[in-house]
Amino acid sequence: MMLARETIQNLPDSYHIGPIHIAPNMILAPMAGVTDSVFRRVILGLGGCGLVCTEMTNAASVTPKALKRHHLLDFLPQERPLTMQLSGNDPDLVAAAALSVERLGADMIDINCGCPSPKVTGGGHGSALLKDLPKLERVLRAVTAAVQVPVTLKFRAGWDDARLNYLETARIAEDAGIAALTLHPRTREQEYHGRADWSRVAEVKRAVTIPVVGSGDVKTAEDALLRLHETGVDGVMIGRGAMENPWIFLQIQQLRRGEPIFQPTPADKLAFLNQYLDLCLSEMPERLALNKLKQLVGQFVVGLPGSALMRGAVHRSSTVAAARAEMERFFVPFAV
Ligand SMILES: Cc1cc2nc3c(=O)[nH]c(=O)nc-3n(C[C@H](O)[C@H](O)[C@H](O)COP(=O)(O)O)c2cc1C
Image 1: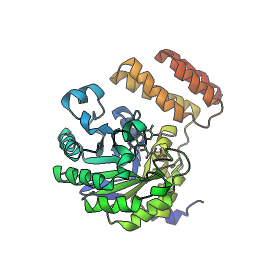
Image 2: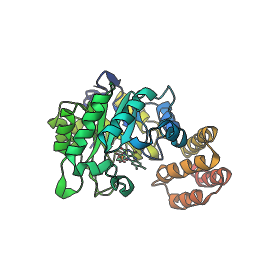
Image 3: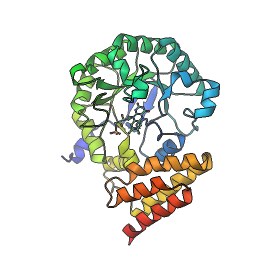
Image 4: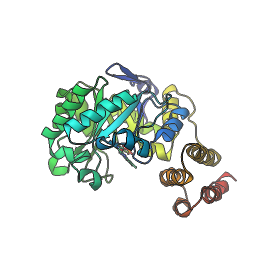
């Protein structure tokens, strides 16, 4: 379905989380291993993205020594407003980490109640908290009491289809002083399979008075505006769609303004990957930069003919030079 010009112009394009103005209301999803400071700056630099978030960080690893090792909460001044996301299930520990993160300069703190990874849920963190809402509530109350900055919650629809509890979770969070919610409307059991059911996001929006953001399966500028229109949410979060098409936020802005939509050519795509790689190389060791590229390429070339072969070849590359040669080999024929 295409939205009429007038409908698009009437869609909300900003909202507030506490005193913080989020404009535009399009948000880069936190993605572990991907949305580090470099990726966030690249996305912000392309335009159209109103809020970024760090990768999920275990509250137990918010110590001066651990921060120097994992660098998950490193950021630069241009990445504002910036949310820092924590995981954990011990109220005192998460509250202490939240205070440290506030001192590091977070504009907001997000609590992760959605990560499906067994490594995370095994420790009772992430989406495991959906199975113990009294514990989630204790964590949220401890964190909101500990810090001045707004605290937000990102959660899933429930552990599995038999235990859907997104409305209860949303109400508990609002009562605990949470300033905004993001729902990824899959269950933990679904992981990333099946479809993200945005009617659940619309239900949450109707159930609470705090801002609600939806996350899941937004792949085009049209998708983003349709989700805003259909659900009445305050904002839309984009994850894998931004890895596949980092220009998506810019394209949403252009669609709103009735401007021609930027369509990257193969040469633009190759230039993007090379620039991203250059930036990574200027800020981290080659091995790490190559890993970042490998992670991004997987989504970036989704759907292009021959992409599986190219992805495999980049993944087998042991040097940056070899990976660059594979990318050239892939993109240059598209340009002729
Ligand atoms: C590689 C990857 C890493 C992710 N890491 C996080 C994370 O650290 N914290 C979080 O709240 N969600 C994380 N997510 C979930 C996304 O934020 C998002 O909710 C989900 O991917 C659905 O949105 P999408 O279809 O736009 O990707 C991750 C998703 C992916 C694909």
